[in-house]
Amino acid sequence: MSWGNVAIEDIAQVKGGKRLPKGHDFISHPTPYPYIRARDIGGGKIELKEHVYLSEETHNQIKRYIVNKDDVVITIVGANVGDAGYVQENLDGANLTENAAKLVVDKSKFNPYFLKLYLSTERCKKRLAFIASGAAQGKLGLYKIKTFPVSNPPLDVQKKIVDIVQSYDDLIENNKRRIELLEESARQLYKEWFVRFRFPGHEHVKIIDGVPEGWEKKTISEISSFLSRGMTPKYDDEGKYIVINQKCIRNRALSLDLIRRQSKDFKKEKLVQNGDVLINSTGTGTLGRVAQCWIDIKDCTVDTHVTIVRPNADICSYWFGYCLMELETIFEGMGEGATNQKELKRDLVGALNVLSPASSLQSEFQDIISSNIKQISNLVEQNKNLIRARDLLLPRLMNGEIKV
Image 1: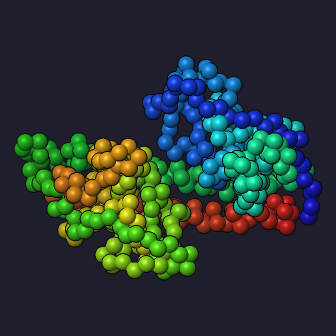
Image 2: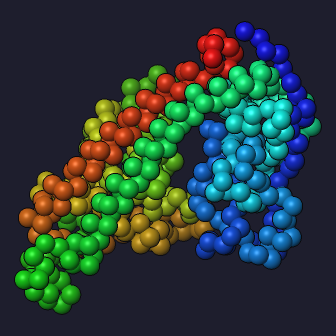
Image 3: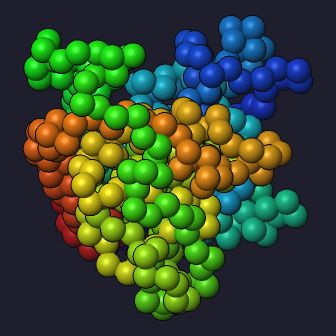
């Protein structure tokens, strides 16, 4: 079914973002003025990867360049040019980078969420990226966005399509919230037992020189069976192996969405195993991030920018994982070298001291946390299936192949 097209300028105002004034910079501690960067926009969403904020003084100088709830934003330059996002209530009033444009939709003419869905389709993103590639600087000019055609079904049809897709999105977001709660529960239990020393029976355990009786100070090397950087891949879309890179490790979680295939053979000990801890080891901003592999992944390794740390057989893997994840900020501060070329050396990781609890306490922690890990893994898999189903359905809804 063809609904015809309409130019974006006929349904929305198109406005640019704004760079920081000269001499001003981001601040890391929270203020009422969050700042959206191009890297935060993609997949129809805006997710602040690393929160940055503005001071009130900086905000006041560029306060005309904010976004509001239900605005749609598009990146206009860079590797992710043409990516779209939708402004939720939590980012109402946030400042927008000069590397993106905002679309203020006339709701009497068009549904802003439908516009976000349309612009997020792979076909649409490729068209926007192609248009940008024709410019001298690879930039998607505002005038090109204004004249860009989008499908124009009746408003009631737009609303029905939005309702269908949002039902998937709501399930996905609900699962994400459940994952966050399960992760926080596990993290707090780890801190309660192994940082605050309020583990079961702690009242009857002596503390000697700050260490509970039966615990031992050990280096990470002493409790690890394997500690090594990954391999240099030979990328090949038809390759047998998959490679985890630094982009796959974020917020103490391992995502396989950005893995690549490669064909080069390597030492089998560098195959990622269930229970391995992976540490980003190159570059300011990424160095020090930690995640643990909680599933079996066939024919998978990591590249040279990631360190594999594998626990000894007598060490409970979940305790080991949470122990190293709690060291993220320490790892971040251990990088050596120039600002953009900092490296986390394997020897420094191995030499770091930790408190190794009694094996019985590790096992008790493992037994409790196993339920959380299993639920998290199941919810992650559910979300993959929901996203896959939604993304297969979306283009068929958009072109009218499926009637609503």
